Length: 126
Image (spheres, rainbow, N blue to C red):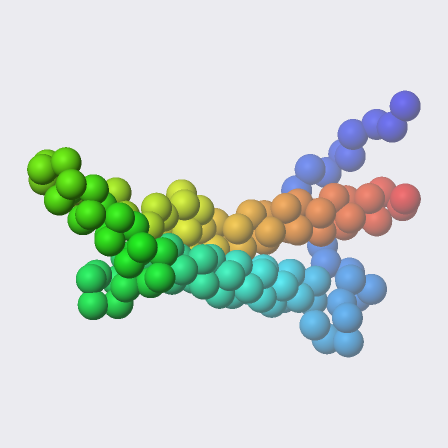
């Protein structure tokens, strides 16, 4: 059975842990930022597709729903409810920047734990 390490403080960064002068943590920061930007762009595209732009920027789906609701309201004599024609925003696209930041932070935390475990194993000689 493997014993726990004697020293539980952060192990010292070794020279073998660098990639030509670029530390693993710096590389992880770059990767986390790239993932966050990619998620931000993707979620912004989804957000824009589901955003309500008003009557002056009608999509074909909104116009078809609007016409059908207006025709139905005229035929039945009720008040038209055009709010049901507005596109529904998915929960993950409501705040694209916030969710992208959360994903980038999660990548950084998981990667940092991986680097910590790697350094602990190297300091134990495994």
